[in-house]
Length: 422
Ligand SMILES: Cc1cc2nc3c(=O)[nH]c(=O)nc-3n(C[C@H](O)[C@H](O)[C@H](O)COP(=O)(O)OP(=O)(O)OC[C@H]3O[C@@H](n4cnc5c(N)ncnc54)[C@H](O)[C@@H]3O)c2cc1C
Image (cartoon, rainbow, N blue to C red; front, side):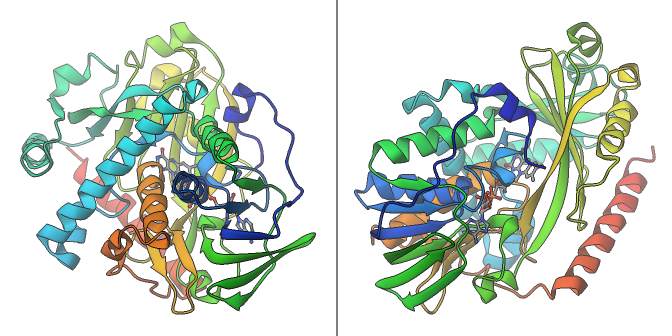
């Protein structure tokens, strides 16, 4: 579960494992995009930061995801609006757009060329949805000055050769990229700004209180005025409130062997594609048109299935039967962190520990805004993190919670099939 195709595309880096700092302004636990973004934003404000990562930079979901960067959250806008009202929901959606823009800005200003961003994400429907897609297009334009284009069946056929899709929206503000390269780019900038990032440094114990936290790894002990926990789907029992309020949900990705001619018989667009199923397929052509990166499935089973490649290959050929002979070169899984409300958990515990987690399957833009608002909160620059307060740390009841999620997912699969029956 350690190596992904992204690792093969990048230079192998030696791990930096020795903690040198003894006393910092802010210690951040977790070196995924939530932790790294928090550290980068704080470093830019002149804070002395230390990131402690149990494995390697972006070892978790951040370095193994599909690489889709688009606005929104794991929870849909309507549900968010129902909970917090229209104006608050619109603020949150605007922040999700800001997160996407922050990623774009970092890639550009830090010159992270290996991240290789490619414009365009197509959200495609497996059933007739022209009216609802046009309504969404108009809502985005009027509420957020955000433009997307509608594609009918014929227009979709300019992008893919498949009978699966009826209607779609294409978002040319959104993009897809190599997330591991992006994370490493952020890490390199944090170090340039004087911050420290230590790998193979699992935090085992936290003691003290706000102003003077003591953080212990197997080989070091550090004092920090502020502490941020950003451990995503790999959150352990270090902070019990956090451990009890998320569910680790696995999802899978595979990469095909190179075969540009065969791939061109199916996918002719450089845009990434995501389908409308509740835990649907997401895929894109990578490696200069030579391979397909295909993701899908969610499960509460956290161990990697042996038949992972077969499961994903089956999904791909259900949409593109012409790709039946295209073999799989790599397959891997990763854990996402989901709260029951499917929104990020961003805030501060009563004892002063900050948390920035639970980004679900929509973490590329939301970790960027999550890290930013936590940094602003720590530096007293804003209280924007409070916008996430209505989505608190609701208990998930562990095993019971997992069973509920798995059966909800099965229910979704049945509902999806019903919706697509014509
Ligand atoms: C297969 C897959 C595909 C996805 N595709 C997309 C996509 O296309 N677009 C999108 O927007 N989102 C996607 N997501 C979701 C996205 O990747 C996540 O929401 C996001 O990366 C979460 O970032 P994070 O920093 O919170 O967590 P992570 O990246 O998981 O980082 C948490 C880190 O904390 C470390 N850690 C845990 N405990 C400790 C400890 N005690 N001490 C020190 N370190 C510790 C872990 O080692 C880990 O590196 C996908 C996720 C997966 C798994």
